Length: 203
Image (cartoon, rainbow, N blue to C red; front, side):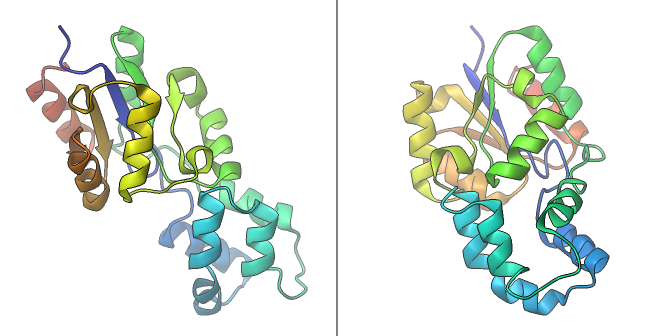
């Protein structure tokens, strides 16, 4: 018997670069000559709503960028945002593909991501074909590390918590999964992940 029925991956920081974290925001803000401190002061509340699909990308950008006229369009800005998404160096993408090729587990993502970048990332890197289920914050309306998202994931998956393995690069998200009864690994590179999966008899 396999040790787990389901293996869930975070996406940003495990498989791909983060979609819209500090480094990615700085790169795009520099590209468009925007004041980083002003943007960051406006960002947190709209971003939380955007990642939970309460508001759209246009509404998020209206609140954070286009509250005054700009010499570029919202589409220009979004395309620059999307361009920040690339495979993570030493990331777990090849391990995910290896697990998928075996066909032994239900595979999915449990990630915080706004709808537009999330769907771009899933499509661009063929993750829709790899994952059996996408429990992204924009689809379930909840964000890690709050307990409700792990409870929602368990309800959707209908599997015992101990039969679910979760992989994330942030300790607070790992702790949230463990508190819900899941087994969790903190990701720190592909070599470490492979060793941990071997220890857990996944490989």
